[in-house]
Image (cartoon, rainbow, N blue to C red; front, side, top):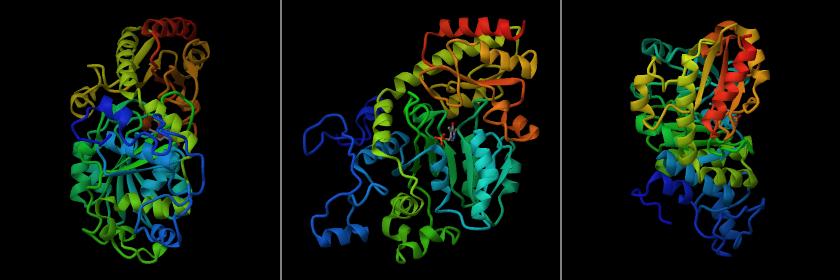
Length: 430
Ligand SMILES: *Cc1c(COP(=O)(O)O)cnc(C)c1O
């Protein structure tokens, strides 16, 4: 189909990027399980390697199945282009890679997926990069953290684990004023609930492992480029604006315009870092995306019911769901994610750490796993697992204090989920 801007989300999640297979007429996107592609002749090969012609060379760079997924996610996010990679964490490195250099930093929210806090706080130091963590509700602190060596601003739209909502408009106003790209991790919200580019995001990253695939089968990631950032407005992004020595002096911004970041990510990022998504993985994610809006509506409906039930329960101290009128983030729902605040939140159990451990062990429908965004309801005690490597201070700032559990509400029957929580809370607080 031609991707007319007039098509609705429900249509695009099924059709964007895919056409009947030209060779066989296959209606579902085939899994192009191949590493290489035969060149028409030597001139064709040379043109492909010079990026004068777009086509398939080698599956570390591009693959037709993965390309459909890239176009689909870019379309759903309203971006100019996208690059898929092997995991959400790979996507974060791929998003930072063209922007950063030794000595440069990223200003990041304290409210992030635990693995991202570790990746940014520790591992990227090996590249000579660093992260400055600040409370993104404190706009003056965000402004103050930006210095001459800052190359990006990073946050989650609906932040893990508490389900807090970031005021993307306020944050993008700050990054715009500083001439910096805003990178938004939209994993928990998905493009159905939130479209960060419409709120000023330059790049959107995803762990496609979660809601986009939606069935807990494969890990994957994606970086979507809005195509709206002027990489040549300053000398801060030479890899995009100046001759790039890693690609025989090609100037990506001058050559590819609003697709500069996407081409750089393929021609240099995937080529040299090799964090490639495989076609089999792309296939599972394409199947999942076809039902994204249906699932997200049910996820949200169930989350609202369960959060309301938990909030009234005397065995529960508090619930962080932004879809509850008691949440300090409630007012941001209508602005940032009008179709709902997602299905990820935490709640504090009376009795603290011990009760949380008992609760997790007593549930029958909820699975105790480190994943989120599955059709199945999931629970984890962040402080003893995903956020274990953080200091007590970091755990608290991230919304993963020892007395809270994080739930990812699935699309099962809400009454069954409530009954399961009820019996487990009875055991946990007996
Ligand atoms: C899971 C997750 C990641 C990391 O993604 P992987 O696919 O597990 O590498 C990053 N950000 C958020 C918000 C996540 O939930």
